[in-house]
Length: 256
Image (cartoon, rainbow, N blue to C red):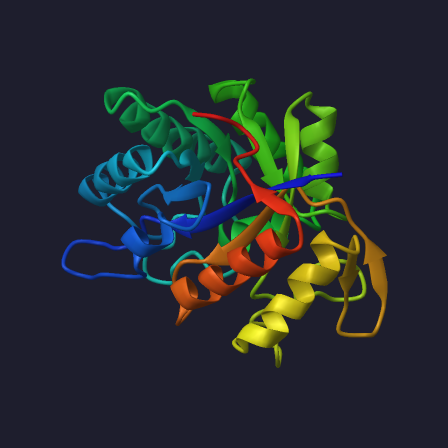
């Protein structure tokens, strides 16, 4: 049986005079792009340019909202926000990408939370419900991209949203099925062969190999490579070639 898998990348993370990642190269390799919304990275011009490039490459587009943390690239743990304020920030970010997509004639398909917001929501049911609610308030037809074994996945399903199960090529996993925190050793996988071996285990064999030696069942809908990872385009090229050689067809989980 032919196996179809989406291949996504977090991008649009340049800002003003600063360039982060090679979005043009990645957009020739992936089927879906998660666009920074200006709160951890990106700006209106970068957002617009990235959406235009995605459309030209036939790549689906989604919003990649975060905590209001431009200084920390959205990777600092932030607490103390009033829930209604955080919900408003998420609605604002999602609506910004959706509006820019509409202006460019490229329908937005999904939402994927970024960095610490996503990691915290994965284990905090209240925060998970808040994120799912914000997505649904903007557009209940949007797909929620989420980690398996997470509170976010459960909250999105309970909210009636369609959920796309996401796996990572360049991150290791704990025995609980969570991403290894970035402040721990070997959280980010830099070796292309190690990344490839992990992906094939998850996609072809249907298991997540963990740092503790477990093999957790998984049925992935989408695979992510971070656009800001050094050598991301090289890693993505090798991954796509290996997946296709193993009979996997790369295609978006939702068409723009």
